[in-house]
Amino acid sequence: MTKPVMDFITQTVVITETPFDKRHCCWFCGEPSHVSFNFPPSSNTSSAIYNTNYLVVNCPHPRISVPCCSECKSLARKAEVDNIWAVNAFVKKQLLKIYAKHLAIGVNWTQEELASSEFEHGNFAGFARSAWFVYEVAKGRVSYAGWPLIANGVVLDESVYEELQAEELFHFDGVAYPSVTAAIEHYAGIFLLDQGYVNAVLQYMADGHIDEKSFAKTIRFCRLLVNATQSELKVAFLTLINSND
Image (cartoon, rainbow, N blue to C red):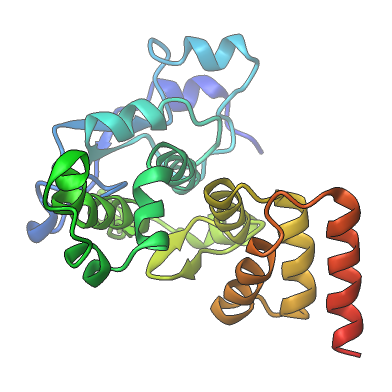
């Protein structure tokens, strides 16, 4: 039986337990925490959700509070989902979009290449000094795995959310993406690729088992077709298929 909405929004907020070594960390991204995020939202903070007829009625856990940074809190408040782990996935997807250019540094450069780039002078000097650090910070935030949540001495069961997830976390080139779809969207954006085409090639390359190797092969293949027409894309895809027959 579904609990009435008011049962959730009038509950006392339970402050989740934070490991000692994480006591200053944002649960979402690992950056220094300055605020906290409560979920499900209370009646005086959820007007936007109610105005869109989105009601948090199926949340499997009590109202809890997790430490977070200001940016993640602002993103988390926009999530129209029914549990804290889904909020986390939403936040990671938004961070991927916000820091796409930062993450692209690691796609296009290596740390050694930046160090020997001869950008010591001129407009690129600052880029050479800070680029890899910026990339590492962005990668760390997107890939950060928060600690298990404990409320009133009880570990909250994340398996309920995992069973409902359409896709699992996908790791590629040191970054943990919320899903394969998020990884495709990220790389398609960086290299100006057609997202649907990348997905089609990946499904063929992976042959039912998407992993880092098949994803890398897909991106390499698709990058050869930047600015190709739809007709050229079709021909290239048919050639790929026929070459493996």
